[in-house]
Image (cartoon, rainbow, N blue to C red):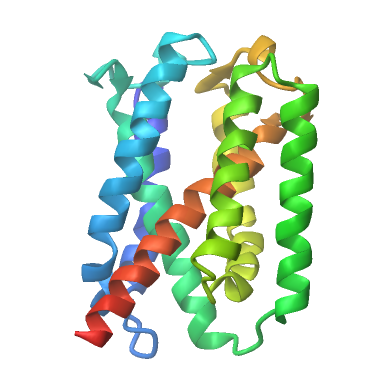
Length: 226
């Protein structure tokens, strides 16, 4: 069905938008802190997406997209970088309100260090796979910056949001990769999957969320200090 990918985007963002008006969380009041960060992150990922599409790292099944393209990408793929980040920041904000527990600094540091180690190993053993080397290479830059240079405090809460976000991630990405709407070239990734989802997608999601949550926290804090 031509509208498959578009419908997935709509369903991804529908409930977060509707539930943004929950009387306790009032997430709609935080929308003004989202857009600039989402725009910056989206531009970065769209450049990445265009490059990888040109290089044949992945492609899009014409049977499940409406046929409108921007910069060589299906319109639905462009919308993906709006709908998914919005839904994930909504999850992050809701958990911050309803769940007061957060990881201690030691556990957060251990997880950060584990991600860095896995990224180093992935980059070494799969240096010839474009999706793998770029994903792990970006994590090797982003994670130390957040932990040791900017010393952000929200990482203690980030990983719980990431774990919860994996639930819709497996649903949405599972559909996209099983139909498939998005077709991956296994010559450019590790060739290992959880179900139909490439391992790299899990780390790709970390980068996407780190950047969006990071900008969200930055603009929110900046507003509070002004």
